[in-house]
Length: 166
Ligand SMILES: Cc1cc2nc3c(=O)[nH]c(=O)nc-3n(C[C@H](O)[C@H](O)[C@H](O)COP(=O)(O)O)c2cc1C
Image 1 (cartoon, rainbow, N blue to C red):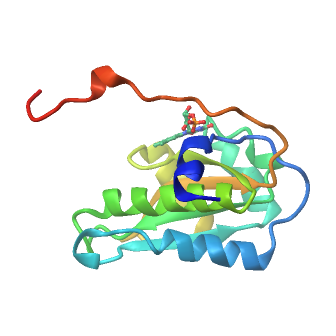
Image 2 (spheres, rainbow, N blue to C red):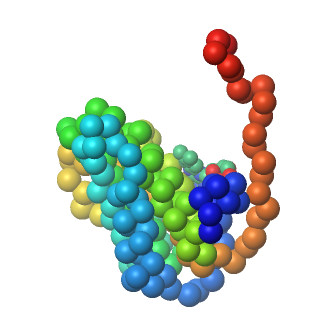
Image 3 (tube, rainbow, N blue to C red):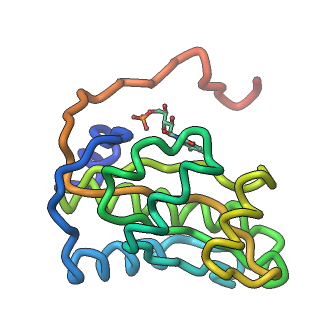
């Protein structure tokens, strides 16, 4: 898939088949995440692959918008280290978007679940996965083989474009 085609056709996918995601595909997703830009190239991210059914099913108990988890074969948690870079949130956002686009390119469906800065989500997530205090869980990318199809949205809005001055 061409890069622009992937960007324009990616959608949040919340229904998945029961098929597992292969180890080879997971490796590509991880490499895509870590290929993103980061301030000073500090790469303040950590990626946690979650495919333990019990852990996946636990997440909706503290995340109100995670009802797709019981259907999903896996997720990748994007975490950041604030001590490594003051731009960790932006860097992790770039990693998360790279994973979403790579998943789409590889024929998977994925959705970004927000965690940081909501402590009612980051604290239980840290506890569930034994994440150290100096690492912030930032975004959970839930994914699997898609069991729904969505058309491109076409979100371009000319009114939000400003040229030279506002
Ligand atoms: C920071 C962030 C947090 C999000 N949190 C959730 C979430 O908790 N649950 C969910 O189902 N979707 C979540 N989404 C996905 C958005 O709902 C989705 O991107 C938006 O509705 C646009 O749809 P699209 O991704 O298909 O273009 C989140 C997206 C972002 C970027």
